[in-house]
Amino acid sequence: MQGGITLLTGDASYIKKMNRSLILSKIIEHNLISRAHLAKITGLNKATVSVQVSDLLSEELIIETQQEHKNLGRRPIMLSINPQGGFVLGIDLDKRSIAFTLSTINGTPVQTNSIELHSSDYDVILKLLVKQIEDYKQQCVHTRYGLAGVVIGIHGIVNNDEMIYFVPQHRWQNINLKEDLMNEIGINVIIENNANLCSFAERVFQYHQCENLLSISLYSGIGLGIMVNGESLKGYHGYAGEIGHMIIVPDGKPCSCGNLGCWEQYASELSFYKQLAENNNKPDLRCEEIKSLLLEKEQNTCHQLDQYIKYLAIGLNNIINLYNPEILVVNSELLRMIPNAVDKIKVYLTSNISHYYELIISELGNKACVMGACALAIKNFLDISELCLTINEENK
Ligand SMILES: [Zn+2]
Image 1 (cartoon, rainbow, N blue to C red):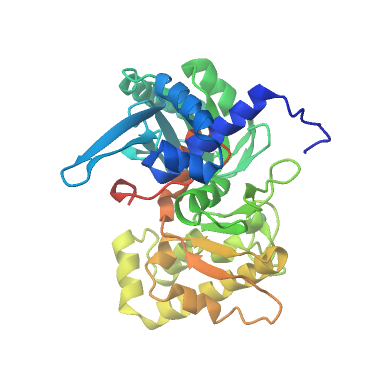
Image 2 (image 1 turned 90 degrees about the horizontal axis):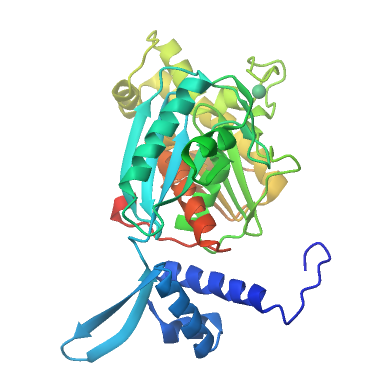
């Protein structure tokens, strides 16, 4: 029991809600499942399952399908989440672009788009978001639940009340995007830090059983999403995980936070690309040029990459010592381009003290935030405590 509240055993509506949550989460996890199998894996009796399923069918949250087989005759009626019941929208609000993914409520993305940002002006971006969300809402009106939820990933500090405390890249402070959007569009909006959404995505789509998972995103800054005992760990205000501002070089490079020598000045992708541009005397290095420099294995680039990985490993070593993670996911499009990146990092992780079970480069890459946003919107809409989804071809 949490908070000292005593649960009355006769609290039927509470128990019914818990059973509903359990049944829905098992239907979405299995994709197709029979009533009998549901009863078996939930431990609920068949009558309870039957009543709940009947409610969910009338609410159009689930559908029945019966597959015929010519040799085996009738197969049991299978249940699945109604893919046309409604949709959710995941949004990744980054520095130079906003990515949108519309997903069915069973986790299949159906539409994605990305808009370039040429302004950091809050009112301009708010207007743009309202317009986009309204357009998506219109697309979903034919369904029972329409656009059932919107989750926005913010590359900055978001507090536990979903207020945006600070977005360094846009210089936003104390902004209530949630309220501003909900006033305009009348849909439930959740605001969450991007690194938290990345770690959530890893758990929902990749590592279902992992209770202690850390996801480190290395893009323009560095964010850490922490899952401990299967739950997001956000800290007292909600600001935990600002690991990019851990000082690793005393009196080192200046950082936008006001300190010197922060980790993200050495180990974010942006820091690597800045240095690469400087070394090659090309202020605007294009993606193709970066790729060819890395693939050519030019000596200076190799040396720079080695230094970068060394600084990356210093921070990882510190994080491992703090959390003793089961799975440590490093999310980076740069490292995805580098063969044997994990082995290269491990060269610098030689301490006898720091322990982890597995170090992995994220397969979700820069889609993790928006996928985590869709997953959180689904979890919130279905009101379930556990969500496991499988990546299908559309996700890739
Ligand atoms: Zn800093």
